[in-house]
Structures are given as structure tokens and as C-alpha cells.
Image 1 (cartoon, rainbow, N blue to C red):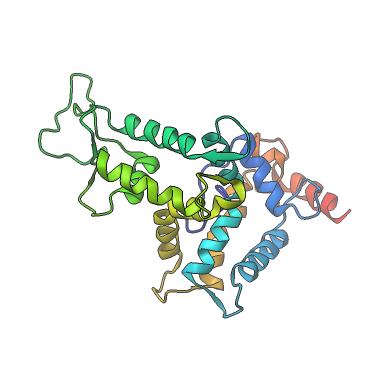
Image 2 (cartoon, rainbow, N blue to C red):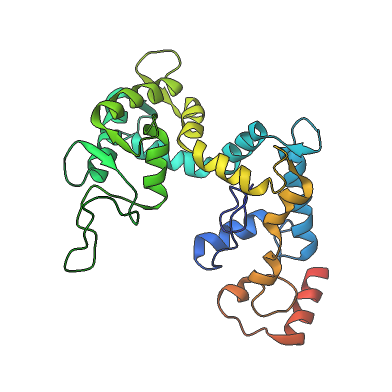
Length: 268
């Protein structure tokens, strides 16, 4: 489900090919024989295997429910990090208190003017939204970015563009119950999946709709594979026909000589 920016979701752009962690993830996913070289054949193999894995019922396309399952698999490392962030004492169990503390930190961070309501997304002007002398928006309770949109998606249940403290408190209890299925006041990492999916539901649906180009409510193999279109073109910066570490460091193996070297290395 991942375009090669993160390899854990679908329908995203190619992004920038830089950074140590991105390099590691790219080679973990595509360098099947661990030789330090990613070929077009290896990319095609991942494309085929990825679709087959996501199409769990073998119907020939990926449903929204199957897309959710694929997202859960692809985003596992981020889910673990999120769980650990909430689990402040590191005992492997998130208590109601720990979850409430994390949720309150989020609300207070977004409710910058302290009026008890989080509303609007930065960049969308509303009544009284004036720029201050430094060119920034004067009203402190606007916010933006993926985190802000995710917050609205989770807590703005009546879609009025704002979340009051009362709405927030009621909704966070519902969210906690998704993971605390036995009602004992805590949940483990094994129980976190349903809550993680709910947190990311808006993102999952948006990615699914972008990938479902014909609106058929199913992602075909061709639509699913488009997320890898151009990976070689964008990542193979020295244009030697393969992706290597040199492409991420502005390597010197450019031109036909570099292509021959990597091609022979891969064959060997």
C-alpha cells in the first residue's frame, strides 16, 4: 500500500528520495537478494506480490476493508511508535490515565487560545482572522497539517468544523473502548489495532479513493501498481538503470560505465 515515500500507504506522490531512514526502508522493501542493488525486475516482483497479498479474497480487486487491513500491516512500525508514546511508563499496557494524558496534551496543543474549543484549519480564513505584524494568523486556535486534519476527523462528529472540550471528552471515551475491549481500564499493543485504524480512518479512505481512479469501489491491479510508477526514474538519479546507495549520495557511478558495473554486480 505504500508509495515509495513511505511504503505503508497507497496513492501518495513520489516524494523526495533522501534521508537515512527512507533509504533503509526502500531497500528493505525492494532489494530482495540484499545485494545493495534494486532492479526494475525486483520492483515489478514487489508490485505483483503486494497486490496479491492485499487482495485477500482473490476477487481481482482490493476493497476498502482489504485496504484497511493492508494499511494496518504496512503501518505497523508507526503503530508501535504511537503505542509507545502513549505508554509513558513502558509497562506494555496503556491505562485510562495514560490515554487521557496523551489526549489532553493534544487538545491543549491545538487549543492555543485556551477558549475550550479547537476549530478551523490553518490557511482557511474565518471571521476575525487577521494577520499579525509578522505575517502570521492572529487567532491562536487554528491549526494545520496532517495532525490537525486527523484531529477533526476523529473528534468533529457533527462536522461543524470545531471540537468543544465536551465533544472531545465524550469521543475520547469511545475511542479508548475500541482498544479496551474487556473493559478493564487498559489495553496492550495487541489490542491497539482497531483504535489505530480508527485514528487513521480518514487517511485510509482518502488514499483508497485516490487509488480507485474509476470509482468502482475496488482497486484493480493496474490501479494498485500505479503507486510504483516512476520509482526507478525518480530514485535512479545517476541513470545507470538500477537504484543503489550512490543515487542517495549523488554518487560518482554515472553514465554507461556505472550501469555496466551495477549490472555485472547484480548478475554476479
